[in-house]
Length: 99
Image (tube, one colour):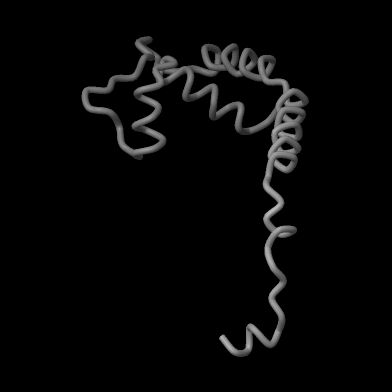
């Protein structure tokens, strides 16, 4: 099990999936004004309540799809990049020394 999946599960559980709350927490590094935890049980967040969320997140992540998408995106970026080096005139060591 990937340790990042536990973090994702924690955010999902504690923030209740509210993206606005997560944005201010992760990007602005602050707790949103008037924020309250989405956990309302008397014992708080227990392992018994948390583990099913972790397992759902773990099953929902397919790293092969992610790696294939990253590879395809990088290949597309390389293919669409202009050939700037081929069209640029060569600079000699004499030109560099005089500048």
